[in-house]
Amino acid sequence: MRKFLRTLAFAAAGLLASSLPAPAAKMGEMCAGIAGIQCDKGLWCDPELGKCKGADVAGTCISVPTICTKEYMPVCGCDGKTYGNDCERRAAKVAKQSDGACPGYK
Image 1 (tube, rainbow, N blue to C red):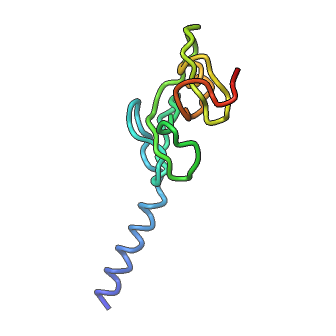
Image 2: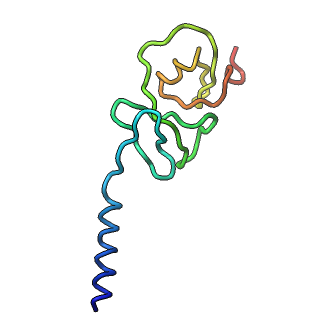
Image 3: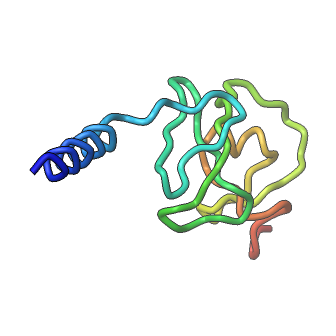
């Protein structure tokens, strides 16, 4: 009986711990992924390059730019849109599919 109660207590503790929210990731730390780690307030989880779909895609917490230069170094977003540079893509909070313009972009 004692062993059963101890097992039950450990199981209950595990359920309680799994229901608590995970601590938020800081700037530059890994986010999302299979653990679903959220970024700290004011940060955005920028997925790995070319990882446009998938529930377990990991990324890195970054600050979202509010001002970008007009330097033209195009990148293709996972939304199929070509952004003038990577800063503009990050400001739009869109994952990067690839460097360069999206296919079919003129």
